[in-house]
Length: 488
Image (cartoon, rainbow, N blue to C red; front, side, top):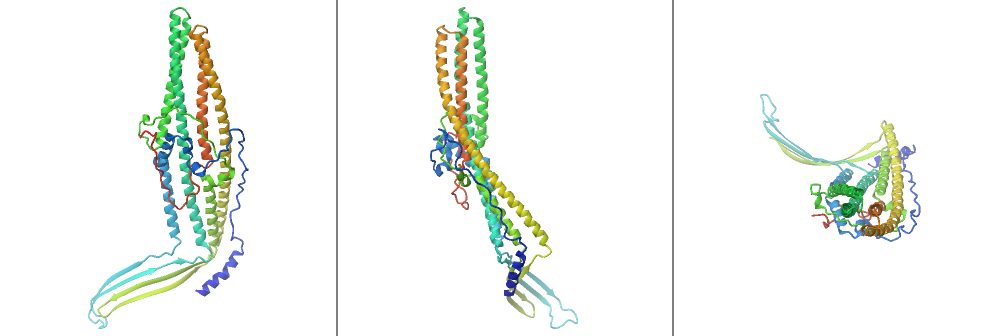
């Protein structure tokens, strides 16, 4: 054994002299700016604790939203499929780790031999029955002289980390999808409520116009125009109601209840200002974004695979201990013996060396791809977060301006309606004022909906929706779902 080890030690420098050993993926170029672009009055500036960012949907103070998101994280097919994929990855890691341990299977055999003495046989071979049994336990164990096991474990653990980050990313994306659909449904519910108010206004205008026409105070064209406006209001209600039902069905599917009736999910026209975004810096994305962490884990896995491919050029030393028992019973004698053995094997690639060198080239290329993927993930993370913050800042400013516009339009409409009922203004002035007010409040509801949806996108872009401090080796636990507002 000592001579074998000395031989390997003498061959290692010779094999490494070719310059193929010790390669590593290059360092990724992932330099980020020191701050995000947003700097206006609506720019992020409120500190948000990590625990709150982990479950950002609770920052809205909306029990209905919280219940729907947490129900989706527990019950949706997307969440359950992500968990199943993670469990598969955990089982694969366990299997791969055990493959690095000593291998051996116990084997046993037994047999019965019956002999009959024929004429002229030897007296030393009497007739009778012989029984033989044996039990053998051979073991094979590769000595980790050059670090193959360490490189393999590095790849195995990095592959599992990548799977865990994929799982967390899928859940974070699901939470964002649920929130954005809920906000869209809220906006449609608000617009539907406004459309019904418009319908009531149009009904009243049609009634007044008809009375004025019957009394000869106005031409019949005013009554016809008012009836047309009422028909348009009815059509708008039908359009908004159908869109709202479609979004309600989408939310039910996301929360794992596709078979439930649409009416089981009650959507209130509740639009409010989005919560403050965290005072984040771009560098935090490297730790908080699951996709960035996953890309980093892929570099680690590629580095382990590259090291393992290079170490394949070096000798492989295997210990082969064995222990066993044997027993034999015959008409002449019976015996039982125990035995053990210790052997070693040496494998040195010679003719296979060109193929192994080609494998090294393959793994170097894969490592470079992993590094490029990480750089792309970092750039995408910064772009999404920065763009989201800029757009959210603009959305907040737009809501502020539209609130002023809606208030002025409402005041103008109230004045026109009073004048029309008093006979001081004609129908066209009233309809123009009503149309302007309806457009202003529809635009305000749409802007509030967009701001809420954008805020959910920003929280997700900043890496919210999971806990980066969670132990990767700890199996994820389901969140206790709050079913308030889910219709259950």
